[in-house]
Picture 1 (tube, one colour):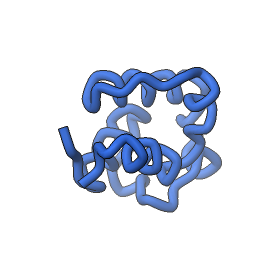
Picture 2 (cartoon, rainbow, N blue to C red; picture 1 turned 90 degrees about the vertical axis):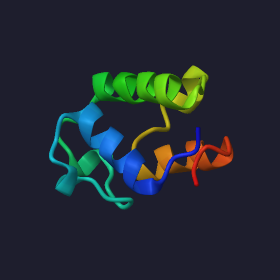
Picture 3 (cartoon, one colour; picture 1 turned 135 degrees about the vertical axis):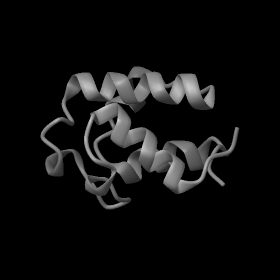
Length: 80
């Protein structure tokens, strides 16, 4: 499945349980108090469930910004 950036931003907001308006491609974990280690686990599960991706632990720990999530999807050919 190929996703648009807006679909990914919606999914990230849902994972973090924040308003969509708080999430943009420039958002980092420092910008969102809810973006903690458990949120990273939720993001990994979302990527597995929605985009059929399996991330090694080392790569999962790099998910500290929206751009990092988008890069994972771009690199896997899952972002339109």
